[in-house]
Image 1: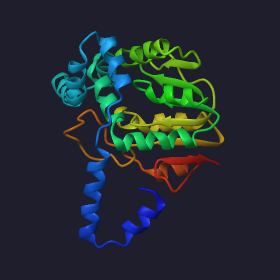
Image 2: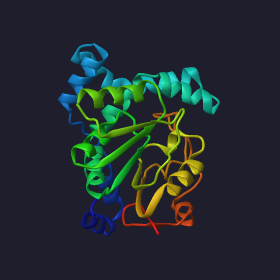
Image 3: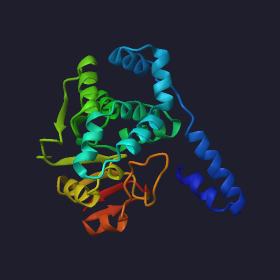
Length: 252
């Protein structure tokens, strides 16, 4: 919600707040298909667009069931899951096509500056959008099916100004003006360490975008999500300043 909507929401009686919140949530989950991306998925996986649409719709459910079946118990087993599952690609693609995520990602592109690191860049669509907007972008994620998908998409689109960092065998080695950690910390068992390390690589007056700080309970829809045992106060203790946006922090 923008600031005006927040003000209006704050003065509503509780029963209307509940109605407004449910409406806003349902509106945000509305899907706007990116047919260019659907075509690329069809070409990449060599299956029909009809099958791709089915996989987009049910990718999250399949991926979640696969996680429950494999039941990874260690960090290494979790890494193997993300390295091998092809369904996470469809889960992410569908999520990114929701109205809420489209709106959120358009806001991200407007507030990023300078050298940008997309940590946990997933399928690479946000990196691609930022690159087209003239930003200098580094993509970082664990190697595997999703990493390879992003790499091949960058090549297919003729984009050669996105550096890729395979977190299986590489570390972040330089500093950035903007670091994104979108839909990431809930997928790692050492979220505090990840955040601490990212802040170390953020330039003074740099911007950190991090989501997932409110995930503190088990999810049946996303059983792979880890509980986050810290909040924004931890980030502030590491030298960040909070902003009007709950996901945006500035380095002192």
